[in-house]
Image (cartoon, rainbow, N blue to C red; front, side, top):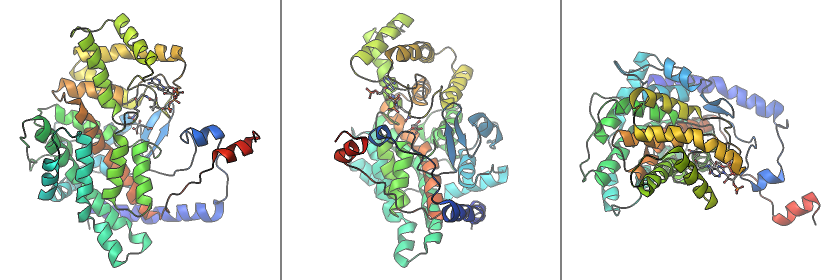
Amino acid sequence: MSALKEKLRVKIEEHRPRTVKLLKEHGDKVIGEVTVRQAIGGMRGVKNLVTDISYLDPFEGIRFRGHTIPETLKALPKPKGKEMPYVEGHVYLLLTGDFPTQTEVEEIEDEFKQRREVPLYVWDILRAMPRDTHPMTMFSAAILALQRESLFVQAYNKGISKFDMWEPMYEDSMNILAKLPVIAAYIYRMKYKSDTPIGPHPDLDFGGNFAYMMGVDTPYDDLMRLYFILHSDHESGNVSAHTTHLVASALSDAYYSLSAGMNGLAGPLHGLANQEVLRWIQALFAKLGGKVPSKEELEKFCWDTLNSGQVIPGYGHAVLRKTDPRYVAQREFCLKHLPDDELFKTVSLLYDVVPPILEKHGKAKNPWPNVDAHSGVIQWYYGVREYDFYTVMFGVGRAIGVLANIVWDRALGYPIERPKSLTTDMLEEEVGIK
Ligand code: NMX
Ligand code: MLT
């Protein structure tokens, strides 16, 4: 058994009594209430999910296993001579709650190398799809196609105790994670680079290999290490995490669950917003004949967008009530690596322009930028300009968090998810309209 799996076993055994005690001794304690607005309005703010992988404070932003983004980036080990940490180390942190040592991280790097070979039928399936299929459809289909490899299903069919289920879920999750950068880069090179896929490099880590397989030079590797870490998890209620958790709660395996989560990520109000941001900015550039927009032109474009009933992509959030620290981390990367880039300057100008407009517009509860407002501009700078691919990279990162979550779901024996619904008649009766 790998050191990571052994560590996880210990952590799981230590944690289980806490969940048992909460349920047994405090199971009926009330921790919130639900209003009519929440029932109709997407359950916003209803406290009904439990995860220890990450927590999102509305004003502080995300903490991974209790650590802010700057703390996480500082404490995780880095490949020699690199600015950003190993993604493998973040996998270790999210699964176990501890920062790994250099040796522990290198063990996972090796483990991923052993697990990353993608069966040929996956390439056949991708190649059989029309080339103009959206890359998120290809990505989700590839994950789903791999479902026949599930060790969880094999174990289930043989008969497995509920409390051992985390082990095959972990094996499936690690197998998927190792393959995702290979699949994503393959889709990119097949679709947009004249069908010239580049295979993995034997000496490179998760982020370095992704950059290599995309065919983009350093410091793109460091950007992608940062990118995958930043996008990994955002507590449990977001659409991709919640969907993955919900599907897994039926004891569907990690392939079924992740593919479903990715389909949620592909929505424009969720992960696809990063593509929408670039599409929106490029539409403005096209309108101005390629000229960099002035502040006044940006303001007019924002109002035109709002007045035509559309949202400003990359701004607002269901939970956050301040600038997303994932936006800040990407901005810092830009200030260091591409301070004079015109598109970065436009994104920076939007940061000045959009919040007061959204405040004046008076609808969005959070006028500040989210992670998606920034990610596209850096990809564009490094030559990855096919913006409908951006959500696939979000998906590779997001898989780290949602898979860690479903391993723990099985470890703690969480049951099938099944909230209760009411009819409109019942709500009207409840509030005294009828
Ligand atoms: N531009 C225009 N209107 C907005 C925006 C925005 N960026 N954000 C929220 N609103 C509107 C929203 O559509 C709603 O209008 P209505 O009452 O007519 O339905 C109203 O403001 C209240 O919405 P909120 O409660 O502030 O936001 P909610 O929690 O419902 O939705 C988002 C959160 C993120 C879906 C929303 O802010 C949005 O659509 N933002 C733009 C898309 C985006 O950037 N999504 C990416 C989110 C991050 N991610 O990666 O997933
Ligand atoms: C995410 O990273 O999942 C988004 O910010 C959306 C969310 O948290 O609701």
